[in-house]
Amino acid sequence: MSELGDLLELLHGAGTGDRTVCATVTSWQHHERTRDAFTAQIEEGNAAVFLAVGAGDEPAPAESTTTTRLWIAPPDRVREESGDHVAVRRGQLWWTYSPDEGALTNADDEDAVDQIAARAPFAVFMPERLAPEWEMDVLFDEGGGRRGDGAWVQMALRSADGHWSAAIRQAADGDAVEQMIFISDADPTPWVPEQHGGREMQVRRPASEWASASVRLTLEGTAIEVTSTDVDADRLAEIAATLVRAPDAPPPFA
Image (cartoon, rainbow, N blue to C red; front, side, top):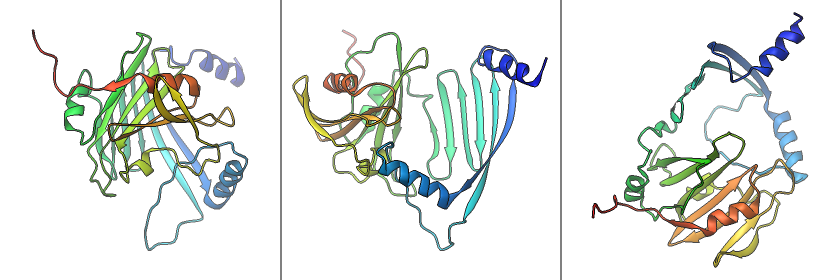
């Protein structure tokens, strides 16, 4: 078979084989050209902005090379290493480590939203109900890391077939961490005040198919943003309208 035929066979069977795959991927980036291209895309209104700021005495290099090592072991194990960052996944469970964030995992999150709600220094909200076709992972960061961030919670929603996803991000209203985990207002797409389910919220519909749809609201002192790149703003508003306060204790036995 030709090289093209081999490639097409691999692509056709991607995700269904039983062989372990190991790969090393090297990427090169010219930072000034990347910045110029990204700025041009922002000016055209075709992107959302996430801002990260670092400090240091050394001048930034003109270009950089990143090497990523990847292992995939069917049916559900993945490991990725890039510099000091490590990510491991087994089925629905995942673990990550980086010098800035430390070790994070959702291993203790199954059926433990009540534990997170009890630990968070703000009211935590969750969907009142989810259809069986949807799965949810919950991540809680107590904050206070190297950047001195405040606490935040993220609920990652995804369809069982992997085609759709959304995120519900939460932090104390007015907390500085809100500026880090929420989409930057540098995105020129306007926020539109709307009411859904009796709740006032700000809705942003993407200007292009690649941008994110987002909904913002505040409940009981908690700033909440529901965002997705593939679920439309109206459906996100439906989620926001049905958020309920997560229990902070197990239900009574009787």
